[in-house]
Length: 242
Image 1 (cartoon, rainbow, N blue to C red):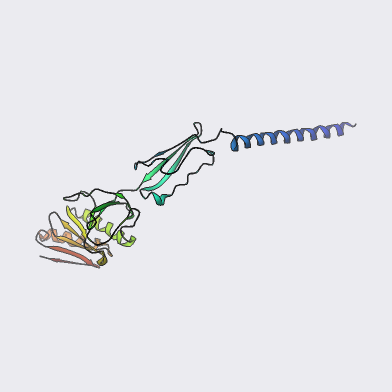
Image 2: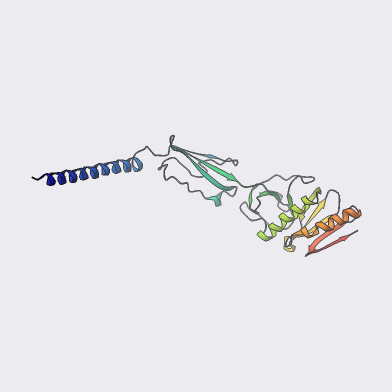
């Protein structure tokens, strides 16, 4: 046998051995990943401000931590705004951090005697207390005859956007609100009854900031303390009565 042929045979043998070794390594790796307990999730925990547990979300240990993803029905938990997954590969532990919705306003259905927290998108997501007296935050008293359930939108998005603009307007003119109320939702109107000053009428179809200049003018003239109401329900028109 020539030297050249022996060299070819050796090279071929080395290639076969390398392929066999690579195959064994891949097979071993596949076994460790898919069939052994080395990557098996041992614990699943949930952190949340809403006292929601892994059991509530039907999350259990098991499965491969490399590919583990929770199946969370956010529609069943309106108080959850989203979640983040954290994995500890050494301890084979998974932590789900739930994001809570912002408590933007309290919506009280006066006819039903119940109040709900709403977030800044207008979603009602949990029960809320009924606070009395001057408002220290956003509280809407809804006197219309309707029902709201957790998960419902308290107002259409456009109306809710203008409701937020009304609260921003009240903050800009720095007044204390005794009551913010909606008499009948079909009129798409609201009124802010101030602790000291005139009632302010809003249209939920309008951004009321066009009235800021009128308020400043009334305050400078001294009329603000003697008028009975300020009406901002007509686009770019402000009416008031002494």
